Length: 338
Image 1 (cartoon, rainbow, N blue to C red):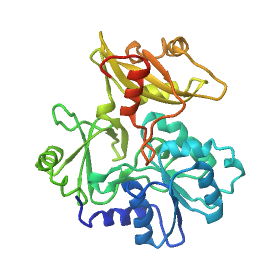
Image 2: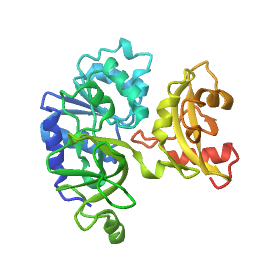
Image 3: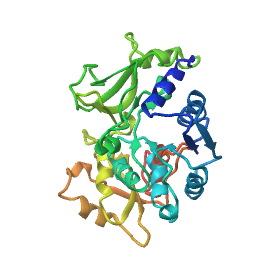
């Protein structure tokens, strides 16, 4: 539940992005998702920018509209910009009108797409947010260096405070140490509708919202989102960050996309399973994957299973649905307890 406070968040975000009535926002994200609603119609409302709406995302149509509508601003996740950067029409499309793109990054697997987007389109910005905190609570500065655009999630917007804690003890962790991201500010939700217990569990007595996100904060305040705690793997008692493994797998010449999930294992409780999309005309098997990883990463991080898929199950906003990947792996690999 929210009052009107997030309108200030949108206004502050607009100022950081130098938005004006001359901008043209191309919005293909669904409006029932906060990313699409806030960065599209509401951003248009507070700035006077034109917004071009589509019924869904389709890379070819998006490229056509960039040129036809002279779009200046786009938004999305790495899944959108992977498709756009690799579309056969991208180099024939006039993309010169674009001035900035809000591309949410942070996870290691997002970096290659973010760097390619700088070349194919224009300088990008990044952000971190959740519906519970008024959507985008951080944003990159327009003059940020390329590494920050492609790796970091941005600096806090005015009125927001951040900290990273040890989720087990609640202790605040030093800069650049991975832990649970907590945030408080004027636009934090009033609560979950008719769920007082869930609200009390998420927001502590000092008004800090515990996000459940894995993150780091640099000594200059820059936040980096690394993933969700529920997606972290526990292999034989060892913590495994799936995004680290995904980034490494993308270095394999046959792998186009990579997602790593945890699947049941009778001895180690859980092991990594690599769900990959291969490059056209390429192939990969379990032995290839093991040979590629062996000696280059800790043995407990190496995926014990490989699932080759045509594509990933996605939400309408462009996020991979890892719980569905876990179901697919359990069925296709014959794993119990999936």
